[in-house]
Length: 182
Image 1 (cartoon, rainbow, N blue to C red):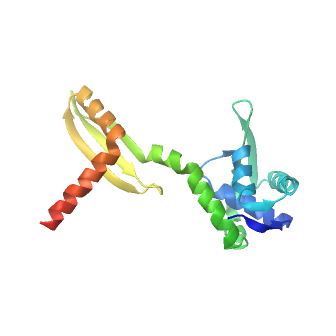
Image 2: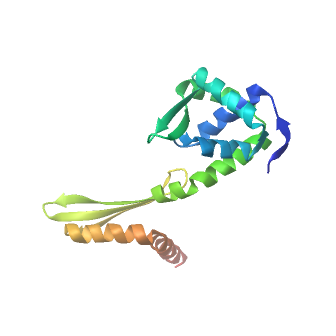
Image 3: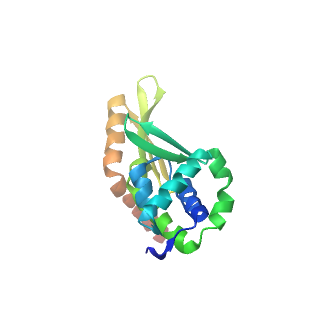
């Protein structure tokens, strides 16, 4: 929910920008940064822009162009060094909506990165399929190695896992729960 009172304190606005950039995984495009902040905080666009420019000048934020036209922003080490200070100075009712929006923005990307599979040689002409599943915090949920024999079979197993990981994980959990009940 958007905090209704307009935030016009330039220092607080800078803290909010630093906080937001500290919560994203990588550098983000300008339009995503604006959406994350202005959709969750009642900040005047001009005040936001002045604060962002000041953070760039003081080297708390790095700005660069990617792909010839895509302006991106990331927090620098200098900015991260001040994290404890700026986080504690932003009220929770401002931080929570930003946190939720960041999670939602990167949820799909994390889901794509959560499922990993590949093949590993064991001996000459023998391979295994390695299948992994991670949660949103990159904590391992499943690490499965399956002997496949041939390279083709290992690749098929790895591909099958990527396409059906949710069913496989669910069936493994069901199997272990069934085993536990007996």
